[in-house]
Image (cartoon, rainbow, N blue to C red; front, side, top):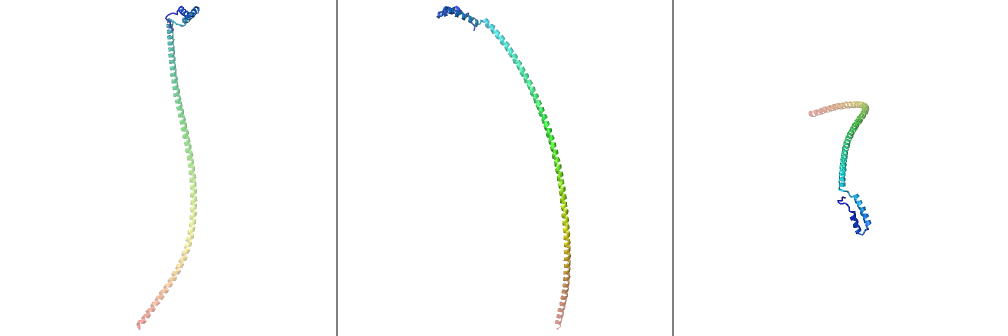
Length: 210
């Protein structure tokens, strides 16, 4: 608070006394108030000095704040750059690890596929051998059965031919016997026919003579 005029303690004591306050008490109170106001109220010079001091402190504080802000910005930028570098390094390391894992996985998959192909080929070869062995055995059994069947058929054919030959011989003999008998009968029939015709001519001749 700025006061352009000094505080008049005497006038203030008179006013207190006129208001009914005892004179000694009014003077004491006026002096006390004057002391308090003298200590608490600054003069224009004090205010100017204080203003300059505050301005200087504010400037210094502003400079310090700006310096701290600049330093903080630099640290933040440096931290950001370091963070970016670490992130990039971590990303590169991660990419490298991922690539290595992918390569390792591809190699393991290729190895497993090769091993699987070999096992499948081995099983196929074994299966082909077993099938060929079974086919060979089946062919042998079929050929053996065919040979046995051919032998049985040939035996039956031989027996059938033998029976057929026997039957044909008997049939031929029967035919010969029948032919011989029929020939005799035909000869007899011819003789009887000729004799009959001769008798008829004789009878007719005799009849025509009478």
